Image (cartoon, rainbow, N blue to C red; front, side, top):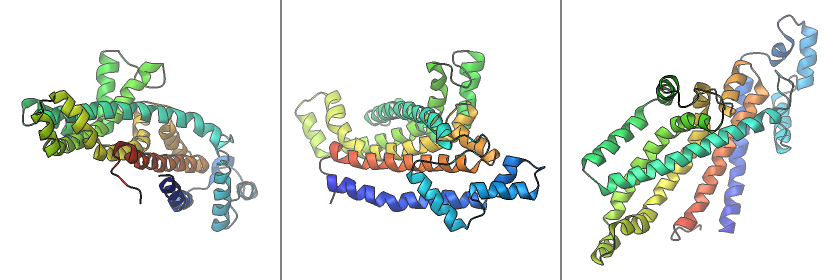
Length: 306
C-alpha cells in the first residue's frame, strides 16, 4: 500500500506541471495588458514599461514560467494586480468557504444519493422506484443555476426561511449546498441503484436469504458494502466537480468562495488571482481522486495495488 501511495504521488508531478503550464499559457493568451489595468488608461509608455519590468512581463515567456513555478513551490502566488495584496491572503479565506460548501454538498449528495439508490433498488419496478428515477433524471438534466434560482424564489423570497445570498450564519449554506448537491446526488443515486441491483442478484445474497437473515441486514451489511465500490469512484469525481461547479453556484448565491473570486478576477484582468484559483481547483481535484483510490483498499480488500 505504501509503495502504491508513493508511486501515485510521483505520478502526480507531471499532471501538476501540466496544470501549471496550461494555467500560465492560457492567461498569457488573453487579450489585455495587466500594466494598463494597474496604472490606468491615462498612463504613458514610460510608466507602462516600469510596471511591466516590476511584474516581470518584459521577460521571455519561458523565463516567466520558470519564475512562476519557483513561486508556486514556495507557496507564493504573487500579488494581486488590482489590490496589490498577496494573492495567497485572498485565496485562503475564499478556499475555506469553497471547501466548506463542497463538503456540505458532498455529504448531502452521498446521504441522499445512496439512500435513494438503495430504496429504488429494493423497490424495483414499483411506483416508488419510478418516482425516484424521475427525480434522478430531473436532477441530472436541470441546469444548476435554474435549481438555485427556484430555491431562492420559494425558500427566500416567498417563505423567508433562508437568506438569498452571502454568509449570515449556518442557514446561509443550506440553499447553495442543496443546489450544488442536486446533480451529484442524482448521479450517485443512479449508480447506487444499478450496483445494488447487480449485487442483489448474486448467489451469496440468495444464500443469506435462504438462511433466514433479515432483509435489512442483507441489504445494508452484505449488499451495500460491495455495491459502494463503483459509487465511491463517482463520489470522488463528483467532489472535484463540486469544487469546480461552485463557480456558478457561488455567483448565484453571492457566496464568498473561490468561484466568486475567480469570476471577479477574470473581469478585472487580475491574472495572478485567476492563475492561483485555477491551480487550487485543479490540485484539489487531483488530491481528492488520490484519496478515493487509496480508500478502495479499505473498502474492498480484494483490490490489489500491484
